[in-house]
Amino acid sequence: MFLATTINYIDRQIIGLLKPTLEKEFRWTEKDYGDIVFWFQSMYAMGYILAGRFVDFVGAKIGYAIAIFFWSLAAMAHAMVRSIPGFNFVRGALGFSEGGNFPSAMKAIAEWFPVKERAFASGFMISGTTVGPILAPLIVLWLSARFGWQVSFIATGALGLIWLLAWIIIYERPEKSKKVGEAELKYIINGSTIDASTRKVPIHIILSKKPTWGFFIATFLTDPVWWFYLFWLPSFLTNNGFSKSEIAVPITIVYAVTAVLSVAGGWLSSYFIRLDRTVNFSRKMTMFICVCLALPVVLITFCKNVWLSVMIFSLAAAAQTVWKGVLLTSLTDQFPKKTVSSVTGIGGLGGAIGGMLAAKAVGALLDHYKFEGRIQHGYDLIFILCGAAYVVAFAAFHSLSPKMEKVNV
Image 1 (cartoon, rainbow, N blue to C red):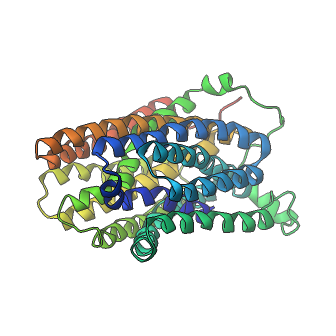
Image 2 (image 1 turned 135 degrees about the vertical axis):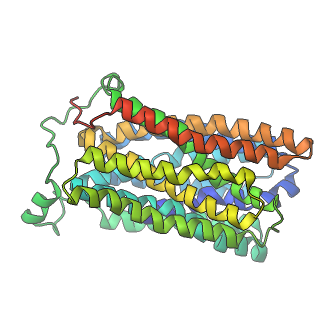
């Protein structure tokens, strides 16, 4: 799951890394690029919600396999595109199929890990969202410079097909795996609520639960922050004096710091539980720490040193990955396994809608300030909104899941 998420984010990051090349070849404006991101986000929203229900129905093994097969084909199809509408289409196809990643991963984590280990497992899986962007500049920029941008898309897309073969051979539910003994199986289900019924839960029942909306609102507000970092960080760096070949170093620093801290954040939440603190305290204390780490991004407005901005970016990006991991883990804490993927899909829909609206807004805002010759002012305003989003999201999540009790459906 870590490797799948890494590949997932290499395929997402590539468009941002090649933006300087592609905008010259196809004469993109910031609005054009915002539209391309918009199509990814809009179809990601649709794919996420449908994938949640689909994975709950067919299981993690089949759901994950289908998702990565189609997103790998969509990633490779970018190499054949020669127009802005073409990029809108293939990015939309990529977004739709990539929507299956997190519902499938969280379903597998709920199947394989006991409650006290799920936050660490989620954090390790989520760290793929940072390892992917670390590897992407090294792979993509080298392939693009050596063989052309088309080869970058083909090569990175092919990685998913290799992973697919391994997944089909290796993965199985623990109760069906010949390698899992009775003692280990009891350990895995320790602390979990056994689903007495296998009936499919109607979507309106899930939507009637307050924790569903707490998760939805939190992802709606904070997922767009991550999308902004992912898709516009390379552009921010080139606007602050870095050449296309130089952006690999600061991007690697940002995501290397994020990768380390994201795993540490997952460990922290589980550590609180081992100290006999409640699940509610453990998850929310970790989330509060994330809010504190994310807020300094507003200081980039006053920062004149781009390398200091890079370090602030690193902390903020790390906070987002830990935050996301804890949010996803909170679903396995509160909802029965048979609904985890569905609720994950609903929250993913919120994040994708937020990201879709943000892409349009960011593109229009940066175009406006770019026309006035003050593009940095546009970035400054966005950074302030990025920091504030976490404060509002934390308050909303806590008000709708005050005790993080088990949800009956």
